[in-house]
Image (cartoon, rainbow, N blue to C red):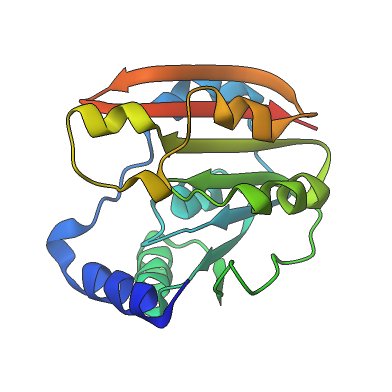
Length: 185
């Protein structure tokens, strides 16, 4: 990402009114298939809503994001909730993912198709990938995010291959066009 992207995300996370603490509700549907111990990697963690949820489950979590402001919010929230989370500021368009292997890898609302082979590589055998991305249909109702950040219909399922798809949904959820997946290595 360009330095301007990092600055934009830092500005967004500096504004407390944009902060969402609750994990995505649909994770309750796949709760039984998500490990409660081991290691987890939260890609594009933002202010940490998914990383905090994973840590509260008992996982050792590493939260990766381009925004140092977002990662500071992760650390503050983790301290307040009594959980430990490692943070790593990285531009994933140029910096590598942590080595792993991980029992759980999450990626919410960050689309970088060429990252998925590295995600699959860092997933432990039997581990799960949980991801959610906006799809191009979202432009029917919303001008943002732009086409660059939207997945084509069925794309999320395809870029998870050859992982076993455990759960997949694509459609309109709370007025946003999204694709959701849970896949196992």
